[in-house]
Amino acid sequence: MKQQTQAYLLALLAVLFWSTIATAFKVTLNHANIEIILFYATLTSIVIVTVILVARSKFLSSFTITPRQYLHSAILGFLNPFLYYLVLLEAYNLLRAQEAGTLNYIWPLVITLLSIPILKQKISWKSVVAIFVSFIGLIVISTRGRILSLNFSDPLGVILAVGSAFIWGFYWIYNVKDKRETLQKLLLNFVFGLIYLVIYVTVRDIDLFPTEKGLMGSIYIGSFELGVTFIIWLNALSKSDKTSKISQLIYLSPFISLFFIHYIVEGEKIIPATIVGLILIVLGIFMQQYFERPRKKRL
Image (spheres, rainbow, N blue to C red):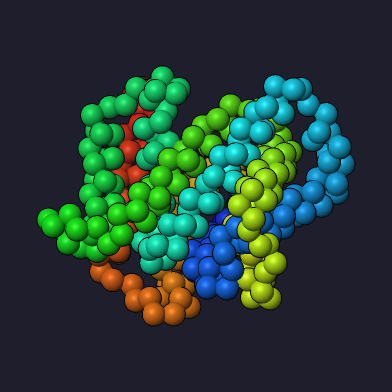
């Protein structure tokens, strides 16, 4: 099998796993509170990444870093997994899975917007149009198609879902600036995130004893939201002769996700407004990437 073919298959497998996460969030929330899910999912991710780093003889070197790098990991760990998943899971608590998952998907555009003040990047008027297209998609989903009324299905849930995209945007930008090996950064970020969560549940006196279904769901989320799936995705990127060939496949995820939601999440029927809004969001992302890509000089 050709290496590029292997890259496509691995990428599609990763996309398939990620597409199940919205359903896993919603189903697991029926059996466990947010803190339990986040605790055991984070712990699972730490175990998986640790095993891989030990196998690669890179575990100990993950901790031989400068105080500045520890501070960086402490800040990133607060953003993700701690704050990001607390906000995102609460959005899933308040909204239907199709709404929370799709609204959170505006993060590529959020990264573009945050890059303007943080990275001092310029944005063209065409990209502004693209962002507006995605914004219309966001409104369509938030109002369940009643766009002219601006009657949001759950205002707080919408704010949290969109807010989680902004938290992820901040995390992504500052994480890119850190040039350490990806898995080593991820391990420390999640260790700090777990510490913050333990402090949080201790102060609030929250019970972390899960039911069997709650534990299984949390382990699944920890494995396939980041852990195993993230490793598969990195392998796909490393095998591909061009990153863009693989990265575009990620846009299949929200559409496949709707399939799992429809057939697994009890009482949740996919409404046309969600599909229309999602198409607009993805269209806006594609437009923005097309307008901002470097132009080849004509010979």
